Image (tube, rainbow, N blue to C red):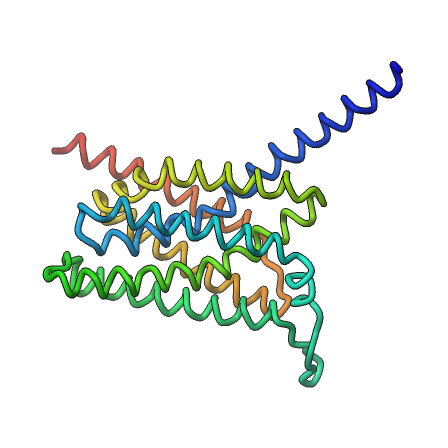
Length: 243
């Protein structure tokens, strides 16, 4: 009886550790997603930004849960279906490459508009509706790409589906809680928006590299961006004290 009780406790601790670790990893992997959503939704009028962010994050949650429930299909995308010279093409590679190019082009375009033309809010109701639909479509498409990292990480850490889903739900709740803060910071400090866009450009390159099986650890990118953010915060503090 004592041995059985100890084994059950060990199993519970293992599951708890897997849940906590996976939740943290999902939050980290969701940083690029929340930055992208914040930049897109900041183009909308202020009164509907919060709803648009919530919808985008909710869409990300649904996408990841559906992909988790289709693990067999997801793993099938890692198998090559055609070979060109020495390179084997997989469904995963095509999705990562397409997503990387889309993110790269979109981020460069947003950076150009921000630097050369400035940010302008949308005026008419027709433009609001069309822009909202366009933003939702963009979020949905990129959610699929961002979900690959999330799902493959979850599969690699545990084979317990309820734990995977619970960790993703927790990560989405954290993202929802802090999405407004990120959005306001990006809007209030233009230099942070430039930093965020350059971060997304780097993520776009990483996705393209990953499509060609050239693995680049995101930790290097996060470290570089974290250091850049620290420098920018010091600059912001210095500017505030001069005013």
